[in-house]
Image 1 (cartoon, rainbow, N blue to C red):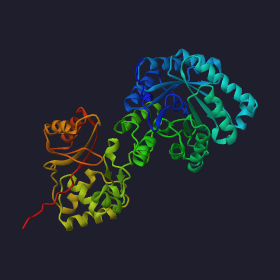
Image 2 (cartoon, helix red, strand yellow):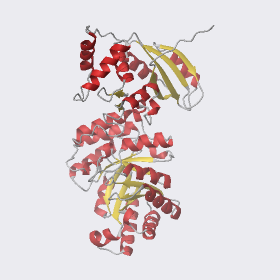
Image 3 (spheres, one colour):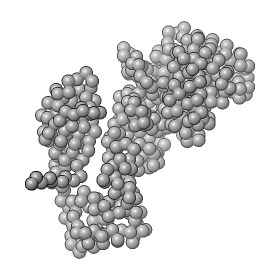
Length: 471
């Protein structure tokens, strides 16, 4: 096993990925052992802090997968899930996981109808099994199932009991997804105030569509662990989505959790393995996430992407685009044609736009269809010619332990880099790059990213340059 675990580093918030456990509880989803190993490796490469590998007592293949994941020696902390029974705990301990996560329903509803025990008996059961797990020499997380429907004073008793028994992390589960952001922040703030030494996790279900918002609110209230699954998989409507939580933490709080440029890759992987296809409007990874349609929107984005984008697509390794249809404005059509190397007079462009708006039955004009329309309007054959070159600005953030000038010198030696400047602000270096096409530009940017000391890059393609004249 790896001697180093990411959780040894103190962070404002940890991501606890439970795709392999909660995610596999999605109706119709069953990962093979090989798929689980692949997902676990990809999650580790992504930089997830904790991976909930499964509940070993559920089935032999789950136990086998947990054992194999442990043997991978990943940097993420590996968690085995368990009911509050000695059998489950021993099964998880035998897998040599880093942490055992014990769950127990604590609301009066669960105590009465599921466990059929009193509040006092429940506290004894929780303490006994947390202590039993700790006796195996592993870290313990206790999950208070249905915490969001548990009377507050009793919930605080539960948290104190589990913590005093040896659980260093307590997860408060919104099991049926009925929290609101205000209530989530208030709940975590009050529990944290009552038990300040405990680390709190949020496990938020998405039954009312508020899982991500509730996770962020819980973080504001004192939670230091957020449970997520890739693509938001899970029981019923799933739980908070890994990609949405990770990007939100970066955009709203400037907190780095994982390598965001790998988000799309692992989302597509889990989409393929799970068979659960994402809708095109899914945040971050959906096909439409950075595709603009209305003319006003496209015009704004072409002028300054911040007008209609909360964060640049490059943050997650994507690019922006816009749809050509009846909603399209003149600037959008002109920009699309020029991107294809086609330049029209103002009169020709106006006529093309008019024809597009007249043909409202066309939902989406593909580039091929658009070029046919241009030929129809102008009466001349369109010969595509690629732009002479692509120019871009690559903003570079360096590791804090690396001398910036040494990185700048290595960047300046890369073919295609025309100018390098060390700057102040969020980024340390900006490089002006010239490439013959998009493929060469991507290769140059990848070469920059691979340099020792480069932590992050952000690329902007130059759309237009204005020449200045001196008198």
